Image (cartoon, rainbow, N blue to C red):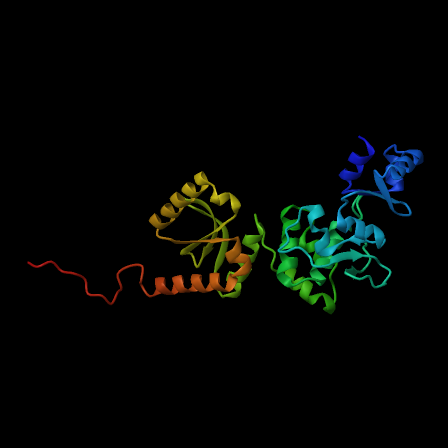
Amino acid sequence: MDLNDFLRSRHGAARTADLKRAGFSERTLATAVSSGMITRLQRGVFATKGADADVVAAFRANGRLTCISAARFYGLWILREPEAVHLSCGNGLPHQGIVDHASGTHPQHPYLPVAGVADALIHALRCPPELESLVMVQSAVSQALVSPEYLRSKLAGTRNGRARATLGLIIPRADSLLEVLAHIHFIRAGLSVRMHVQLPGVGEVDCLINDCLVIELDGGTHFEGKQVKKDQYRNNASIRGGLLVLRYYYSDVVYHPGKMVAEVLAVLGNRDAGHFGPSRWTQKWVPAS
C-alpha cells in the first residue's frame, strides 16, 4: 500500500507514529510533503488533500470525535448531520464551532481520533435532544456493541436522570431508526404497541397497534417494483385476517410524526365507531316475503 492509499484508509490523516509503524520513513514523508502529495497538518500529523473535515478538526484540536460526530465511524444511526463538531478535548478550552465533551474513560478507536463507542454514547445521552440520542444508542444496542445495562451503570446520580430515562425507551430489537421513532410516538399517544409481530399468512409486521391495526414502516427498498407488489399482497393478507393496515415512510415518521399519530388515532376511532363494518345501530335488511 502506498502512502496516499494508507492515508485514505485513515480518512485522509494519520499520526507520524502510525505512519512509521506502517513502514513509511521520515524521508518518505518529507519527500511527499515537498512534492505536495501530502501536507503536514501539525506537528506529528500528516494529511492528504480532501481529508475528512471532522478528522482534521479532531487532530487540530488534539481531541477525539464523540457524541453524534462519532456515530458514522461505528455505523450508528443519526437523525441529522450535526451542525457543529462534537469533540472530547478534555482541556476545557473553548474552540469555535466545536462542542467540547468530557474526557473519555473507555478504550478509544484503534487508529482514528474518535472516542470509544461507550464514551460516544454516554456523551450523546447527555447532549442532543432525546430522540437523536435514542436512535444512536438503539443502533449500538441492536449491533451488540454495548448493552443498556452497562450504559446505565455509568450514568448514576440525579444529573443523569434524563439519560437513564432515554435508556428506558430502548426496545429489544429495532431494524431501523423508523421503528425506534414510531414506537416512542405511538406509546406516548397512549396506544398498545407490539413490535415485530408474526401474523398467520402475513409474516412479520413492523408494528401492531391495539391488536387490530398493522403499521408498516417503509424504507428505500420498498419503492422497488417487486417489493411494492409483495407489500400489497401482505396488506391484502392482513385485511383478510381482520386487521387494518397503514403504511408510513421516512418523511412521515421523522418529519411529520404528529400527523402520523393523528391519522392512526382517527382510524382506530373509526374502527371503534363501526365505520369499517355494519353499525350495530343500523337495521338489517330483511327480504320481502
